[in-house]
Image 1 (cartoon, rainbow, N blue to C red):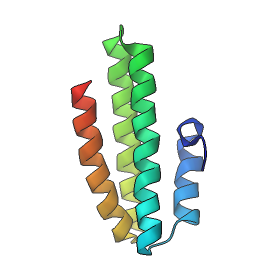
Image 2: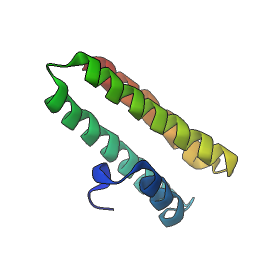
Image 3: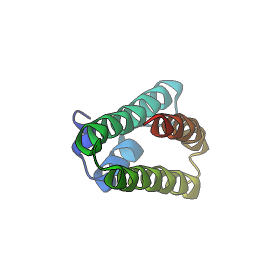
Length: 100
């Protein structure tokens, strides 16, 4: 899963869905991979869009959309352990985004 920040959202979702199970170790890895992807996107976006708050706002909306889409997907397939991790991650990412 190297370079997850460059994967399309669909490839990323497929990867975390198919490669990571529900056991505690996989859930820990799931949380780490998702956090890492979005932290890198936020950092990169901030560097690119520091002078363009309008573009940064669009990037923030895209991140929120992806996290919500992932949450909806895992709810549909009843992977509630991953939903729990995503809710935690969403809260952390929302806080980070507000700081930028």
